[in-house]
Image (tube, rainbow, N blue to C red; front, top):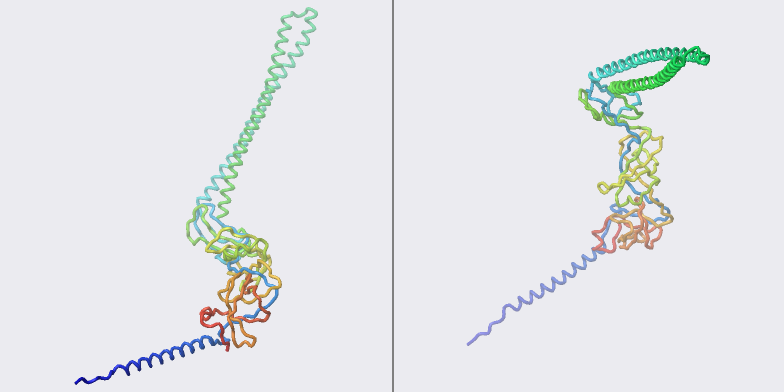
Amino acid sequence: MDVIKKNQNKPLISRLQQIVVIGVILLFILVFYTKQRFDQISLKRSEIVIGEVKRGNLDVVIEGYGSLTPAKQLLITALTRSTVKEILLKPGALVTEDSIILKLENPELGQQVENFYQELVQAKANLQQLTLNQKREALNENVNIVEVNGRYQSAKLKRLAEQRLVKDGIIARNTFELTLLNEQQLKHRLEILKQREQQLVEVHQQAINIQLEKIKQQQGRVNIARQRANKLIVRAGLDGVLQRLSVELGQSLSTGQEIALIGSVKKLLALVKVPQSQAQQIIINQTAIIDTRRDKIKGKVIRIEPIVENNTVTIEISLPNNLPASARPQANIDAVIIADKLIDINYIERPANVRANSDSDLYKLSSNYESARLTKVRFGRQAGRHIEIISEVKIGDQFILSDLSNLRMMAEQLVVE
């Protein structure tokens, strides 16, 4: 006889169904609770930055950084091979045009000056000797002219006398013709001597000119050698500050080697680096404000570097002559260049990660300032720390400026405590 067995798994299935149902219910409750928590995310007011919409005029500024540099600089180099004998001033020292920075030494240069000078003295002595010789030649030539002129005048008188006697038949015709021929020869010789005298004067003058040119050249050699010798005492040559000293005591220098750099302190320029993306807004004569960390100085853009370096463009700004004590060469500065002026616009402090001429979602505070709802805002031009708002907003509206991008996907509304 068969015995019917009862199914023992049926209660087990029933329990699983109950567990599934309970799990679904718990999951639904968890999701609902989580959503409620996300929809009600709370932020402390002290932990966020809040900005208020305002209306008015704004300056479009471009910020940069850089340093002050002298408007006038003088680079001092060695004129000849030498050795640094003594250093009197160090970088940072204020100098005048005649301030002695250091002294160099070159014994060969002193001997060279003496040799060139002796050659100059010899050239001048040669000129004196040449002048004496020319005078002697001129006197000798003059004596010949006087002698021949005397003989010519005598022959002329004799010809005149014989010319009357020939008519009377007292003197033979051939004798008269010989007298006439002698007169003509003496006259021609006298003319040649006078031409020779004139040419001799020109030759003498050319010889003197050549010797004078030699003296001039030798004088130039002496002056250059003396100048090099004088430059062994290195002077600043410019009122300002000793910016750089490139030599050490006992160092041997070659011709043209850098010794020092002098920069003016009364007239400075500002070299400012600005982002390449904003450089196209800058033009010549725009106003700039230079901040030395102690004083603010008003300047003007005078040059824009055409080369881009490390995604920045260098702007040169002129400064007034009367500068505060904080304005010194090589001092680090901040700069603000006023590129444009926005008239009667709505604006707010620029929120985090917001760019000009773009749209962004910001949390706008409610009228009671206890909650904030996500709102799309369209922005316009940027003006320093502020940015123009193009979309419809009211003056006094408040927005959270802090970066809350991690919350935008979870909650459209925040609670501000």
